[in-house]
Image 1 (cartoon, rainbow, N blue to C red):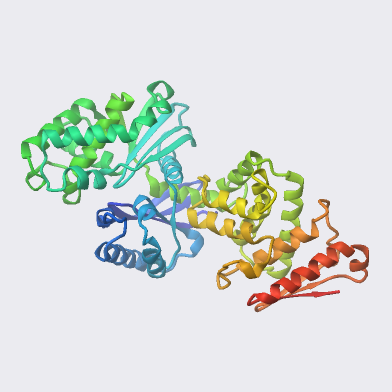
Image 2 (tube, rainbow, N blue to C red; image 1 turned 30 degrees about the horizontal axis):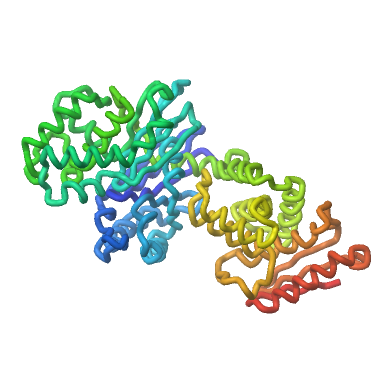
Length: 491
């Protein structure tokens, strides 16, 4: 990452969409521009968990305005992250397909734990260096994230389906702010969050921080009304509750520091925050400056180098957890990487790194059963919480694992996806070359790509020296005849 590089993060939250642009300088990011629009997409989910057309249109309109600012940004300079609303929405693919085209950059739907990890990255990078044990709380529109961490490392992450938009819609739908509604909302929030107490109990952290969303809104109100700035105490929450009860309806709430976009969801947000104070015995909550969007920016920096990419550590952890034969995984990764570099010398690091991860994990399904292990491996990847990975990335890896063996004609593959065919061919060829579970002889082997035609050239005498490997390669070439691509083996 070069000093002066501009980076951008787009946070598609349930209540607001945000765009943060920063300049990388000497390991830190200096804000250049920040845009926020209240989209309230989370309020557009119906009982069947489908986004309404109006909610999708509000999101697309906002992304179009963000896209104008990002027109000159390369893909590696932008991270667009979607959270709970799009995790829930059954018709999210409809929104994402058009949203990707409008924004000009891929939108990643991240899991709850990954959202929590990114939040902690944003919070920790904007706090002074300290060895304190931290609790970080982020109450969003449809989810609440809790994190325990120290310095830049998140040790425990969790996400719960409770937030300001969803709780306001459920308990304050008519705008009425009554004591009974608050009691019901707080009780329901504690029931949802109760399991957090086992992990996030008070003796495991020394200082509590609140990030973004509800915490920021409540802190602004309290500070504007004479309470201590930058910190929320329980008595402040009690005072705010009394002000809301006195108003009786969201339309009549008039408080300094309360922004118009927060008025409809202040009841739900406050009830969740009060529930957390009670459950986790928080006496003071310090307001953090960092949030998800800053975490996404710092994650872009980490991803720029294999040595700091969190995904590489996650892959190593998965391989260890599922008792992968490390030597075999490494030799398959080397062989696949060699072939891939021959076929596409100018390919980007991201595609090569993704292929390497697939090679390292291609046998994780064997921990379940040898028969059909490629399908087991794909299922594991597609249904795991893997730090650093967005769900589409895990789906792409899962697709490579599922297709790395077996008949290609039986697979429903997106052959138009850029790079898929070449990645898959390199992985399958590498598995065939390493079938004896020893280092293959790659001297003189050469893979070339021309359009949708792949050609593997074997050096003179190679097939005679390795007859089984040559047989497997010929069989592989025949299998590709049933696809839109051609793989020719020249001996």
